[in-house]
Structure formats: structure tokens, C-alpha cells
Image (cartoon, rainbow, N blue to C red):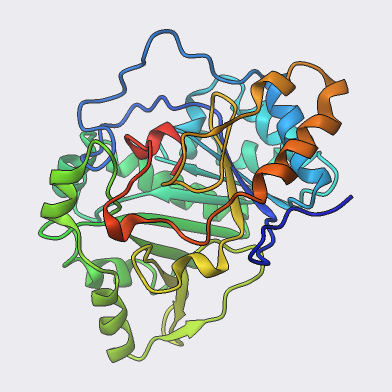
Length: 326
């Protein structure tokens, strides 16, 4: 079956699949007032998730990242892992989590087929972590990272949203953490969303600041693999871990786009910051609809734009990153 591609020659092997927009942290840059559902949530059922994953796998998706909100808040999170891992064609199952359940479940999830974990950890300082996330369980998150390393995941990553006047000066602490740990630390530039314009203007700082510091200290770029995300990765012979930079405002950031998103309510998003989402749920009720679902994916990919329009301040309908899965 024909793999997914767009009119710019980009191929899409990577699906970011949100299974909930609920989260139990109150991160300043995402949900500063906490999760507030708009009516009764209508998140996809396990059967609907299975049909989405099956359809994407049939058109070339090799990597599934289970996202949220906080995806581990779903009671059937383990079943979603198992389902994705047992789908023919999918060879990588990953998740992004705030880590609050990781210490207790890292081994079990690994045994079910989860192979990569990204953990949000916006500061190595306990007080600043609490200030940014609205949660005081930093040690539990750190314990979860150690549990993931012990369990044998082939890649453990730490996500750090880069914030001017907060954590942007903490590169030395993060470097010290990965000197002997095979962990990727990824600094993610703050992105403007519909609800975060003032926060963006106050705290945005370019990842180029970190990049220049790394290059000055002898770090060099590590080439990106075909199924990797958008990070520019850097390695150093004296460190067991890597540093990654995700810089959505950088020139040609979208040129290597290889990922699509499906929201927790069953909408396809061709870009995090453009359109209101394409309805898939009308085709997720029965296995007999799979051919129409696949046809819709191909049809919509022909409409994908060349780039986002963040430089023009156009954030699309993304009110906060938890609403689509980041």
C-alpha cells in the first residue's frame, strides 16, 4: 500500500497519537490553571485507537508516540502500549510523560513493548521545578528516569522547555547530569499558543543560545535518523548523554517534517499550528471503514502546507499544547 507523502516530497513514518488532554501538572507554559475539561471528555476508545494505529501502520507509519495531556492518566495506558507494539509494521513505540507514574511502571511498560520514553523535567533545581510545573514531585520524576534506565529502554530523553529568566541558565547542571548517564536532554524552544502570548513574549529565548555554548565547549552535531523527531542532537566524547535542540523558529525547520498528529478526540492535525483538525472519528466506528480512513489520510496529506506560520504570530487553533499532544 502507498506510504503517506505530501506534495513537497516529505514522507511520514511517525505518528504522535494523543489519548487524553487531561494532565495533573500545572506547567506555566501549558496549563497554568490546571486541566479544565470543556464538558464531558469524549476521548477515543481503545477500539478507535486500534483502528487509527492499524490504518497508519498500513500506510508506512513505523513509529508511534503516545502523548497527552499526561497519557499515563488513562487507565488503559498499558493496553494502548501493547496494542501499538503488536501492530504489524510498527517498530518503535514511545511516550512522552511528566514521569509521575514512571518509577512504579517503567519495567512493566518496557515488557509490554514501550521502547522509548521522553520525560518532562524543566529544572534540576527542586524549587524551580515546583515553580514551573506547579508540582513538588521532582524526586519521583528523577526516580522514574533511573527506573527507565534500569529497565533497558533503548533511549531515555528529558524534555526541557527553554525559558528565559527561569531555566535558560541551567545548562551546566543539565550537562553534569548526563556526564555519566546515557540520557538525551532536549531543550525545546517555547512556542506561542493561543492562550500564551504574554508568557511567550516574556520567556521565549532561542535555542541558538544553547547551541553556541555547546559548540564553544567542544560538542558536535550528531546526524539525525530517518524516524527521529525534529531535534538537532549534539555529542561530546566526555559525556555519556546527548543534548538535543528543538528550534521551531529556525530556518528550514519544517523541511524535514516526518510526523503527523491525531488528537485524543480523533482529529488529524497536519501541523501543530495550522488548521482546526480533520475529522477521522466518523470512520473509526467499524473495521470495515479502514479503506475509507486510509483514503482520507492520503487525500488530506495533499493539502499539507510547506511550513508553519509561527513567524507571523499565527498559532492556529492550538490553545495549549495539551490539547493536541505537543
